[in-house]
Amino acid sequence: MAVKYSKDWDIEQYYDETEPLHHWLLRKEFMIAHKGQFSEEYLVGLARTFINIEMLGCVYPTEIMERVAELSKDIAAKYRESKKTKIQRTLVSAKSVAEKRFQ
Image (cartoon, one colour):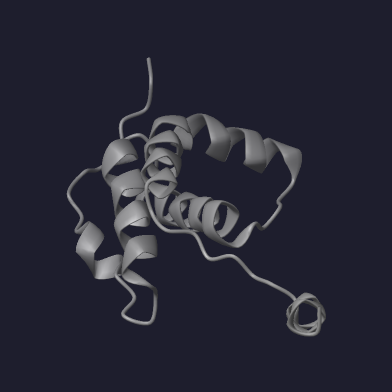
């Protein structure tokens, strides 16, 4: 029998006003999807780890990467799909701009 954890806690208390809104919304979606499957503290940590991996490119031990990948596959896929329709920045080196300017 699987262990059930409390769902009687407020996800909103973990909003960090210094965090970009799109990070918070994705982290919140992750916590909503898995609330009750893990302890509150563990889920909050997993959600932060998910954001660190997805948004910042952080790398963790294999077991953590696999667990977060499994838990976030639908959420991450939806997020990545939504990014495809947004304008992407293209960075150009100063050298290439200077070379084009003097051709």
